[in-house]
Amino acid sequence: MSENSTIAASSAPSWLGAFASPPFAIIRVAETLGLIGIAVFDAAARWLMTSLNADPLAVSLVQASASLPMFLFTFPAGALADMIDARRFLIIVSWIIVAMMAAFATLVLIGHVTPFWLLLTTFLFSALWAVNAPAWLSIAPLLVPRKDLDSAIAANSVGYNISRAIGPMIGAFVIAAVGMAAPFWAFCLSNLPAIAALTWWRAPAGNGPGLPTERFISALRVGLLHGLNNTYLIAVIVRTAAIFPFASAY
Image 1 (cartoon, helix red, strand yellow):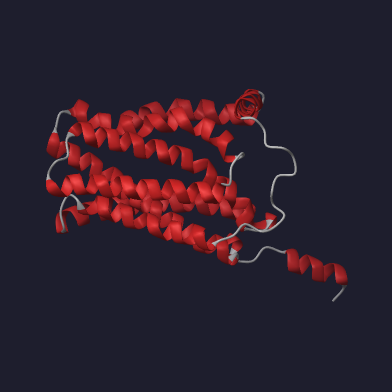
Image 2: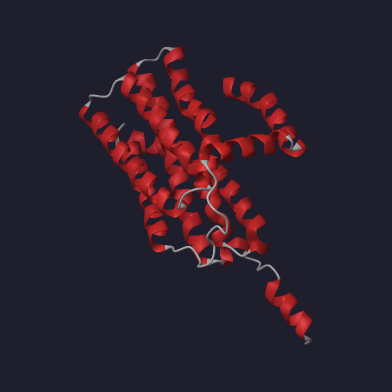
């Protein structure tokens, strides 16, 4: 076999794709467990609101309090993710989520939860997740070789869709079998594998930024200008805006 064919064979993607990289496989599985926990929380929060206040407006506010932070905070969080140690940031925010959900689960368990506390907790958790999400995306290139990056991005989407498919079902079974507080405790536990995986993993040496860190406001401005001048991104935004208001209403 020639030298060129040997190099080509060694650089060819594995049939496992991104999962051929142990750090990616471990962190991806752990993150998917966390996403399932989020879906369990979403289903349980809506169910809990119907037991506290079955008014349709009150129930719809649960969805609004979960969606609004994603609209408000994801864009600035994307700029922040490029300026910080994403791994350390994810660990800290994940511990904050665990502590907050443990406190909320305790309120549910002792029967002291109110619609206000439910909406506030949903909003705060969604805000934390909105800040967290770009950091999760930013570590993907550090977990896999460049040739497997497309596979890694696809795996992220698959994990999210799996969580949305089975999470509500798990939440319903847990509520029926154990009680209303159980899904919130389950959500706490679902974050622990991700914390453990991130604590175990270390970013490869030499992946730090080669240029000085950009200022936050400057990064926001550059990102906004890039988006306004990217026709592909504008097309995606237009199509999303055409679909999601109606999908959310449904």
